[in-house]
Length: 154
Image 1 (cartoon, rainbow, N blue to C red):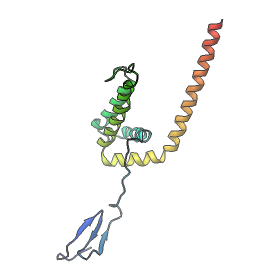
Image 2: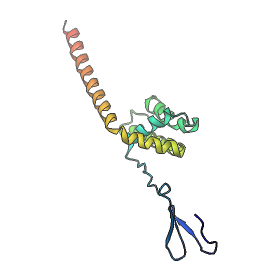
Image 3: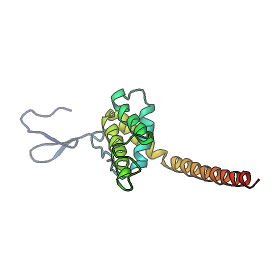
Image 4: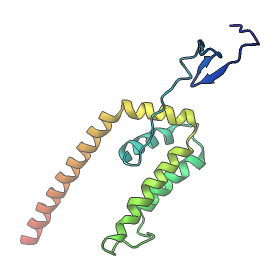
């Protein structure tokens, strides 16, 4: 598309206007509402990182905060020990989501967007798997309780 050089053009969100604000060029691919990641979306962040960490285009620097958050959550070493009644768990609640958010921000843009799309597509499957795992853990705990109770009584 050729445009006269004396017409002043400016671009707003992928739509090019002339001085009279008539739309000259409209590129649908450039107008993209990017989904935002909010701090209270921890389940979605985990699912996004699951798909992003499996992608080969993800760099080690993007994978490192996610791996560190898992290690920090599972390790007995904390900034504030867990035996302190309230403050022991506050650092887990703050540090882990912060590291997950940093990991998502460090992802390459195309990997992040593809992972968000995959996470949205598979969110119901993820909820089903988590629900089944919780039910399985409850069944195992109840079974262990009755087994130990029976062994103690004999």
